[in-house]
Length: 476
Image (cartoon, one colour):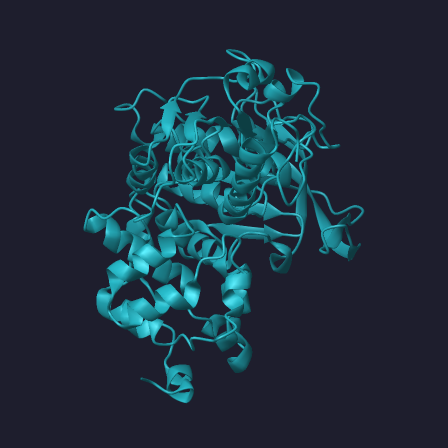
């Protein structure tokens, strides 16, 4: 047993990665994972706090000291089972969730040493035990309750939908997951690149859900094939987790030119339809020698790094605020910079320029300065008069956010929606304005994170269980 002082003296274990000059030429995952010895050493840094503030920072309330303690003792199987009690997608969350803003931000080590960089690497340890379990062919060891006789429809197979499906299957309900696309996974498969989240991992964790009894129906567009009213005649409860997949544009001149992509289309072509492997795959993608990506979030980083792997010679990310205000994870910004992505801060496009064939040839931008904070708490960007300048580029990717797809919502006017088109749902239960219909994830939150969507899915699943078992058809 190490003392608290000895644990605090252990340096964080950095995860090995592909070299930048190597990885920009392949789709392989960038971080290479911990070895068992590295995982044990990192786990020994955990102080095993009795009050466990890290759990409060986890939207699905994983027993973090519990699973890390098992790793420190070399009990990797026990650590996996401890994680999977609460998290149905541990290998995914270990890779893409912003632990530095959630569980790791609450880590006592961070507070004692007054350094966020010294936090226990909770996400990396979660990834380690999930990868260990997959290599051993292990599945979550979860007891299922007796069959309830209730049927549940889950619309959308992103993180929220997958969590609802898994939790309700465990509670004994018959669950069917409906996906509009031809593969299951939602944003996990069409939005996040292979080099950040290998699709084989998504498939493995979804297969575990199928083995727990969840049924899948792909190529099934709710709102066209069936309405919500029709679903309620067939199912005892319905969950809507269709995400926010409608791209936003700036509505500036030139956005309709050849060579302008939304990040959604660009990443869907690359990730879901394997356009990076054209012509062996059926879907092409414009690569561009000089690419400009507009935005500052994780999606912008994904698009910029994908463009490099598609053969771009120069990729520049333009963002209207400073680096400090960027919402992207620090790790994603660091990886993008290592790979050669250039950053232009405090600039904003005002017009996209065309050549004689209506192809993109450049952008006109204006410089910005930061004013007072806006509703997000970040300082509002303000135009600097007379600061216009041009930048050459032959491909523009807009990564400035997404809105809910209106198809299902237009077909269901009884659903209350907010000013940006998202479903209004009770934050504690996920209940909507229609009895028996619940919602969660990006369709409610706006573009958020995988783990926040899962947290909403967990709360909604419990509320749906209560509704079906105790309400006699009345909304709770």
